[in-house]
Image 1: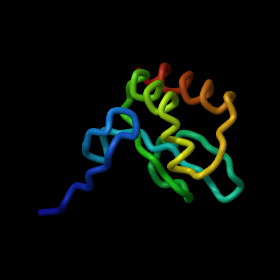
Image 2: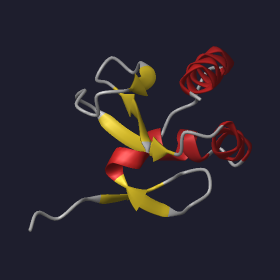
Image 3: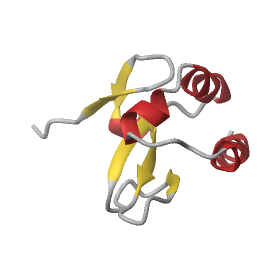
Image 4: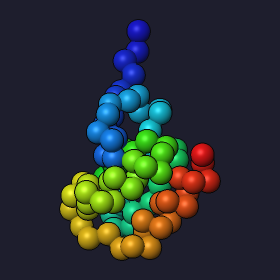
Length: 87
């Protein structure tokens, strides 16, 4: 039986299967974007497909801590728009 990897949402801090979460990736150029395939190279963080989880992650600056960099407000707006489209 193949093991299904679990990941922790940076918004609500609950563990779920990797396939249930959305991956946010920071690539080598420092760009931060949603990784819908889950296979883009770079540092990844996982979040539920829920705008409330993204809001919690923004307020607590968990994305900034995960990626160890200051994140521009435009990136947050882009992430919010993409998550809203998926719902």
